[in-house]
Picture (cartoon, one colour):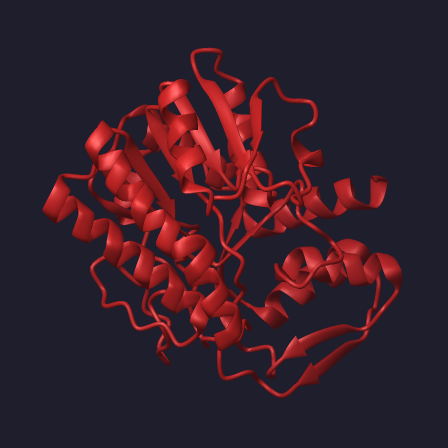
Length: 308
């Protein structure tokens, strides 16, 4: 297949690309704006276009010229703590051009694959009952709202123009190779970065918030199988199906690192959901992935990080 990854140079995208590059039957194309860091892709055999998604006419030309069969949409400028102004920018530069792209894909019979968010799109509830794909979408952040708008647009284009799609809702916390240790997202990566720098780890809330964590190679493998099997017109959770609290993860890291690092608990943020565990029955029915145990995954990521 000829596959275009929009936003394929990031942490998740580069790992997905690595998995597809291993199969010579696929030709991989990447779309990233000029300012994007593409260093994660430097060793891969692929074609990179340096254009913003908002330049939709050029994107359409890329699709036609390279006979793209699958578009994988990964791009987002938001994080759970983003503001309304950030959302307005996202709507202008990502959401609206994406809707136009969906229409084009429908007309050209190109499959549209969207990476949503299993961590924010369902919203908040006090129980740890796993979220199913059929549960209602009730996001409480602009980030989650943007994901809901994209999903609803995809479903609308499927109903009205027969857009062929796949919506993937990955775990809220994928972690592993290529993740930025010194950024603002990803508890495991940020905590490892703080340990390396010998700094205090900051936690929003009391550390009881539960998330579904998945090792990035497991996520990549599951996604690869979904694409290869040409799974269409469904929404799929991709996660571990198990929940760990922030305090659990930090306890794992104390065991692994043998460092008694300091933790500073700060006031909880209203945009953060308290519990997110994904029901992965659909994923297990469609793909065969041996999920990496949490402790093993963190150990591998930590050892790799301190060697670099």
